Image 1 (cartoon, rainbow, N blue to C red):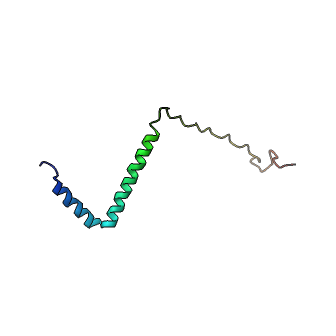
Image 2 (image 1 turned 120 degrees about the horizontal axis):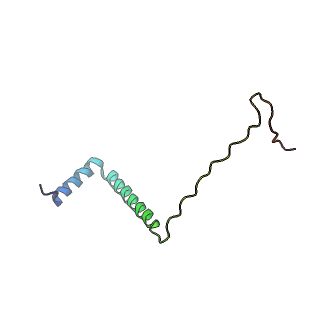
Amino acid sequence: MGGFSPIHLLVLAVVAILLLGGGRFSSLMGDVAKGVKNFKKGMSENDDETPAKPSARIEAQKTADPAFDRDGNRVRDDRPA
């Protein structure tokens, strides 16, 4: 089996349009075109001469000191004077 001839591809396209409907098929092709365009744009942004900067490391925040102990007694007073 040699593959698809142009006639086979034409029949397949007509069947796809009939099943999906003209408007839906064209919007689907538009979405595919937008995806390819965004992919190419993303690839060209990363092709710069400068290497990509490593992302900044997120440091863990220090845990807060408790204001009350287990019995409910105030340990520290953060209220403004």
